[in-house]
Amino acid sequence: MQIDKLRGKTLDQLFEAILSLKDLEECYLFFDDLATVNEIQSLAQRLEVARMLREGYTYHKIETETGASTATISRVKRCLNYGNDGYQMTLDRVHNKD
Image (tube, rainbow, N blue to C red; front, side, top):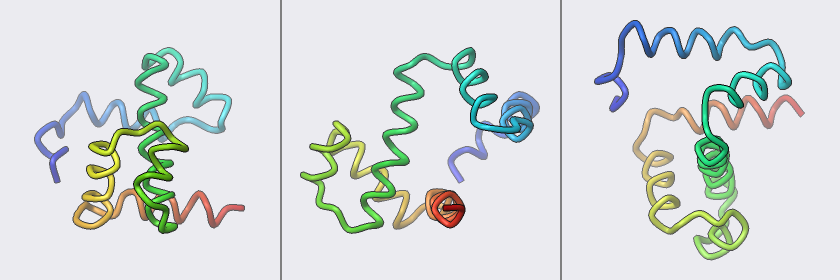
């Protein structure tokens, strides 16, 4: 995992903070303080790109609907194909809630 290079007390604290959030409203409050609007939009965009790739959308359709660059789409696709299945795991959980 790429993130293993960052593993430690500080990153553990961040992830523990995220895990402590109880609902969407708390997420909005925390992330509004934590990150810029652009950073939050980038994270949300990547997750949406992953969802669309899983559903078989073309790069062109994803680019048009999300505004993501082809570089971002390619990176997300690489993670879907060769990553740690983090996108798969979370998308399955979120979409199985409905």
